[in-house]
Length: 175
Image 1 (cartoon, one colour):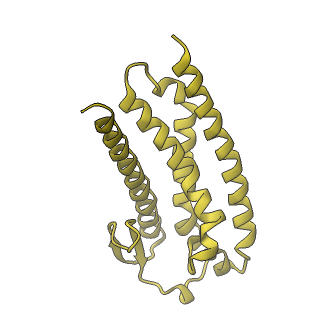
Image 2 (cartoon, helix red, strand yellow; image 1 turned 90 degrees about the vertical axis):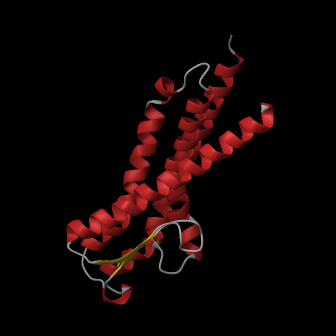
């Protein structure tokens, strides 16, 4: 199996972590909608054309009113960020010598959970009409301050991820 086999495992772990983040994110959308009393028309599992899932709410975007929509739409990003921070805080306990699969899973999970939603909210949402960031318009806010905050979070989290990468390199060199 050798080096190529190891790379396939790492690739598989990457896919599993990305799918897990996606399911948690969309699951929180669904749960928040149910708790807020908003009907869900459909839950598309990995079929929205980008390989990700999507919760389709019964209420059309133009008919959505009320601050509860901010909770429905933004809570998933906060939950996934919190998971990322928990992983980051526990990184020294998660990384074990001789456990490369566990180590790479923790590393990939940290990257995905800390960077994906801030990247989407801060940058990619500019190119996606009707993105989660646009929920700000429901309460009369501009989405731009949300994007700026997301970019700041992305910058901080990228710094943390790079610091973690440095820690892993140092640990790998030590006997």
